Length: 226
Image (cartoon, rainbow, N blue to C red; front, side, top):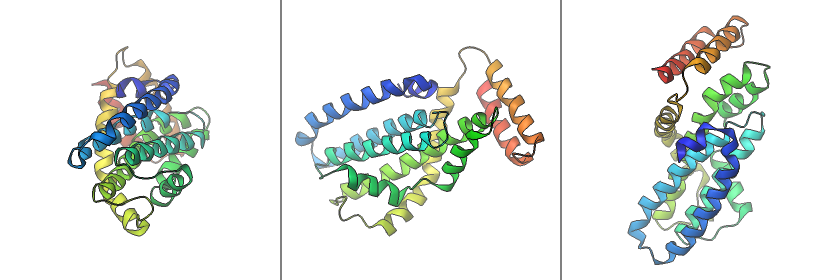
């Protein structure tokens, strides 16, 4: 499921449909679930939304991808709150997303680079999904752990939450990279990856990205071809 969502930008409408139906199922089951059994379910919710946010990050328009990812993160908080029978309303959820995750300097940069004609989208597609997935993972883990301890969104300490969010980002990047690797295994040859590599070389030659950045992005592309 996550592979399909990530592989195509056109899957965004399907993602919305799936989130709605997932929330209906959650509403049916959360009231009868034991508290001790909720953390594994919370982890499933987080992992699903990591995949959804990686798909949302592929929106080719700078800024619109951040909005799409924020919408996914908001829905994740809504589902976690429903799982733990914690009160939730959109304004509070948006404040939590903004206060803990924000837009992130790295994610903002990856989004804005899409505005560079021709090659900007290539760089954005390589970096934005992983950063967005990692951010979603970190945010979800912070909130889920707080709910598991009996907390609510109203008593969430943002200073502590931001520290925990930063600590979870490294794990989040690993999770997102694993999902991305699975999703990127080529089914129709490697021509597209070589084309992206050529565009990245042009970007390096134009001085838009450094040689070090080019090398890292090149290694990611070559991993997909293998």
